[in-house]
Image (cartoon, rainbow, N blue to C red):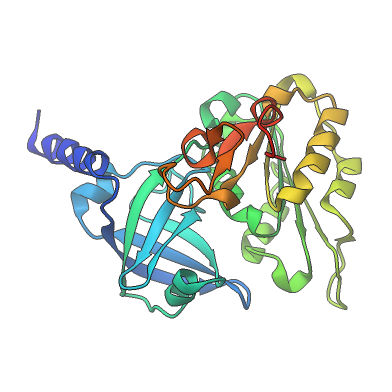
Length: 290
């Protein structure tokens, strides 16, 4: 084995051996998306640890602000983009507030990745219907961009996104790019339009009127406020999609990442270990999951 491979294997073993240890990462880019959400690009400082860091769309990391604490954040960038990760973070607490006060070049800690992501390989060769609400677009952006990077391996890709207002639409530039591509079918809606909004108004479920689905070759992926899940699943089921081809993310339940604290308990399972991504067949048999 050549020296580079030996170093990378050692780095992978380091990542796996002590999952409690945060690895230092530098903030390399900060993009304000709304007045509450900011997109951070992070780069692990150690070259070998960075090369060994692999993740799936739908997984999350623990972000440490030294002297403050840590918080679980879903990864927004695609696994096919190596060398850095993107995290869309809402300013909603001590840790996230402290992260929002940081600047490019500052150091934070990263643990992970944790959990089970979306079944990307299984989705290949099929159509994909992605439905997001609010901040739920952040983990789905990882999956969408991963599909984009291997677009020839997928059929029709449909994206439905609902937001409270035009000001709260996340990744607006990304949506503009997807909107102008012939191989992405994008539909946006807001609950509270303003004078600048010329799109749909209403619940994201209303957009299903425009969606044609071949249930035998379509996978569904859903992420957003938990209250929307049963209604979106009902629309997918009405289109004939099977329960084991519909995937939901319970990423909002994340806490410690190990199933030790119990905050992410879903029925008899822990979302941070057995999820956060479950297919609907699994989720419907978990007490209080939806």
